Structures are given as C-alpha cells and as structure tokens.
Length: 132
Image (cartoon, rainbow, N blue to C red; front, side, top):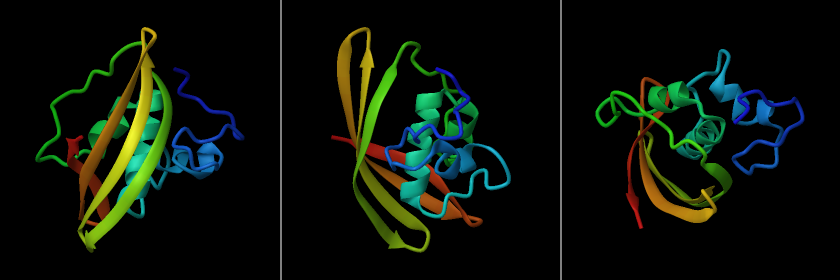
C-alpha cells in the first residue's frame, strides 16, 4: 500500500481526522513513539499495519514480547477498526479491546483482541493480547 498520504486523506484508524493530524504525527517526526495513551497507540499501530510500517510496529512493541522481525502478510487489505473499550488500569498499564477487519484473497477476517499496554519512560508500548 502507498505509505504516503495526502494532507487531507482520512486516517486509517477511523478517527475521522486527517492522517497527518492523527496517527501520521506518531508515525514520523518529533512525536514518534509518544502516543498520549494506550488507545492512541493502538490506533496508530493499526494505521501502521494499513500502511505497512514494520519499523513503527516493532518500535512500539514492548521488548519483552517483541519478535526479532516482523513480516506482514502481502496482499492484506485492511477494511476498518472499531475500538470497543479502553481501560486505564493505572498510570502505567491499560487495555484496549478492538475489532479490526481485513480481506485477503477475497476472504474477510475479523480480529477481535483485548490488547495489553505498558507505559515506560513516558512511552506506551504494546505488550500482548488475548484474541477472542
């Protein structure tokens, strides 16, 4: 997918905001890796999947669970994101429940996950999640 968005393209995370004002500011520039909360980080990670930004995905994955490398499935078309819940457990821990829809080779898929996030050094990181 084209990794360059026009200034007025809507953000793939579904916020309704233009990409540069939403997740784009986390994907590049001085705010890189500094989403203000776990939901914003989760949305920006979805946007990174849509845009094929493996570097951002790895950089926002907690080192304790991050794989050495990540290869995205070629041909996946991401169709939408629904955030169902964001729970801040304390200042350093949160969960985000979401459903992400995609299509590969004509077959639709739904990923329903409750993801765990941790904040360290002022930055939120994806840790892992329960699919269900």
